[in-house]
Length: 201
Image (cartoon, rainbow, N blue to C red; front, top):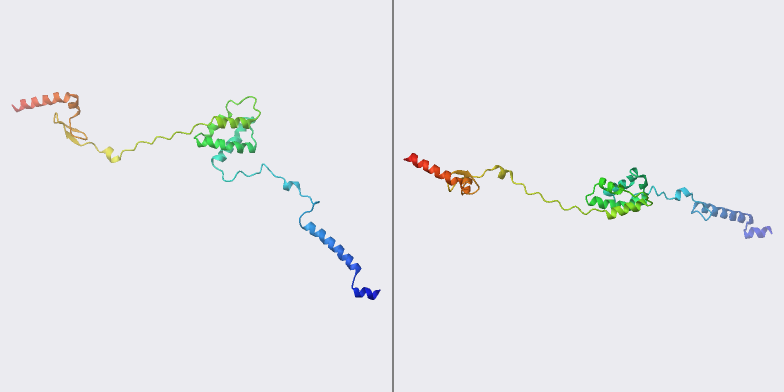
């Protein structure tokens, strides 16, 4: 029997030990690899924190100003305390008011003035006002008249000889002076001509 065991080379005890080692290795591999069905994952690590959710990417400027305005409404009326989701849903409506020339003070006044006494859903009231009271777009500003050149404004009209009384006056073109156009220049011109004739005599 001893020879037969040596010739076969079978070590029953070693085989049992190796089988135990294989089972232990499988347990070790399972512990080191992916967790099995009985493994537990801490709930704190997998829980989502809604309050720490980052704002939508690619938005800033008027959007952030609208979010700040809506979040601060509870300082005026504590009933206007909005959730983060409601603030983000109403912010584009406030941005639309800004795009039409409304100031933050005007939007705040529209959202907080004359609120109903029984207000069960503040976000619905604010959304209704943002939608129904939206102002029209501002009309285009009139273009200013072209400014006259400094040289043209400082340069006076040239001297002209009046065709009626020969008086010298400034005008852009030749013609009669203001007195001749009104009728007084003719009398004055006649008086001057009579005086000149008397002096010549």
